[in-house]
Image (cartoon, rainbow, N blue to C red):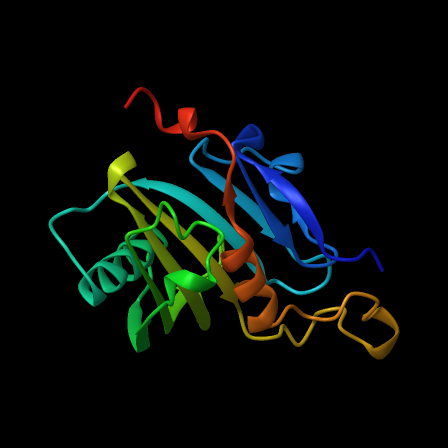
Length: 186
């Protein structure tokens, strides 16, 4: 099993520690320029790092809820439920010098996969890192769909164990900015 590794994001403008086995989805299909998407090699789990326009009209906990509901709308969620929203201690972030406020949100969204009718409850954990000096909201999402009964998660196929909240926390806290020019002229 390959260990966690520091991985360049957005052409090296950022880097972060990814969990073992993370597959860069851009090697498999097109991914929007403002996203970095990684999938687990065995489960349907995914990690997404997004550079979004700062939503200055919402602040604090409401900003985290806004982005959660926005993701649900984009994914065509049939239901969204926020379970908790907590402030994130800026001192724990590699981005602490840039980040004005940070929030973590846990919730569920009822989403059907492409070409499927049945919607499943997907657990989402999100971290919102607000960088107003760059007019940017950084949204990190950990998608945890329920295990698929037809999945290949047999005992012989767990060479890469499912990712944990600890893996997501490491992604969030290790996210480092190397090149502020990614945000354009300031």
